[in-house]
Length: 586
Image (cartoon, rainbow, N blue to C red; front, side, top):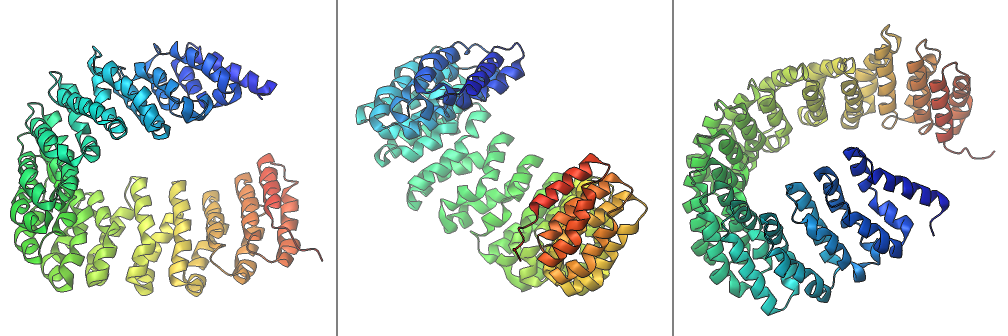
């Protein structure tokens, strides 16, 4: 039963639903489950749902939230036995002019269908499609119809299935291009639920129609239909029936269609088997790698390793490597970045000797690329080549690339390279790291951007996990901890960030002898921001210290901070005390 507080809260939300500001109404609409829960099942059905029907002429921003939330109301209308009443609310939204509203309404319909019995679907869901959406005068309803047919189809008897198949045929043949596009986009889903005996006589003509449509944005959706059909056919049948369409779409006159074929080229080729991929698809793939449109070349470049897994070593070397090498000189930096993000995966396919002979120069060239995303992509994939040939061969080019990325003006680039340092350290070894990279790690600790300093501290923690505590005590900790006396308070704060990160990977002895004394020395720092970070850090150290250290050193310091003149310092000191693990009674 709703309390008086619940009733007031619900009334407040309902008042917001009537507010003149669209964003206020949209925010309130997002709380429909809260309202329904407070109202109970009967009032939700008798009061809330009629109220929501009166809201169906609201702004698109509000309707999008409403369409999303309707699918979350099933339990509040009495469960799956009464879920069909929500379909009545969604019917209008399925015909909304705004595509996002329709998409959310479709998702809610599918969510409701999941809890409905086959009998409910036949009685309540099917009539929503046929005749309501099928015969609706406005094309937007037919767009939604194409997306929902595959949801209903498996649960209805044969005569209704035939009607739904006829519906889909009519959608594909519609005189309205957006309807044909929607039908093409949803053909793959329909393929996955239709009976095998109907695929060849009924679905193949639909694929033929969508693949030959005069609108390119209808044709490019046919690529995914080809992939879905391959999953239903035997390999021989896929080669006979689908391969011609796959080749046709991959060489289409419209770049958007070629882009879609390039983006899905691996999945498109897998359905035909390795032999056919090698005899029929290699030439097409090379054409996509050399396409006049940069977007197509980028999409194809992202498929290199996946497609080459279907090919023999000789074909990779003799047919694929030359166009790949050309992409390393591509004028479009995004093409080069896509290449760098995928081509490293060829090393395990070719093995050490042939990687050294055929790919090493390409990898080195990409590491020296002027565009930071290219260098970053190579570094992010180094693990694969390290396992095949070892990273030492790249080290001379690797260091300048890392250094340049570490000094990039865009702080997100610096952040990205920091995240790769522990992986590189593991591959390059402690001597290389100490000689070449440790100074960079220290430099990041004093970066002007807080997120960089924070990541740099986490980085040190992960390096200790790679190289061990003894290395940290001799090589890194003295340099990090000396910032505690720096005149710039940001550097002093970095020391505390580092100590927080180190606490979980060093021993309690190191905490007691090295870390804790530094924190206690900063307890009286003149900057309140440092003192409250001291309080937080003491709370962290307490999680890894024994009871004697806590009682004799940490707790007294926190008690002092509890009397600090700054309220934030007192607040964090109190939180730290609450977080101290319970001490065993003596």
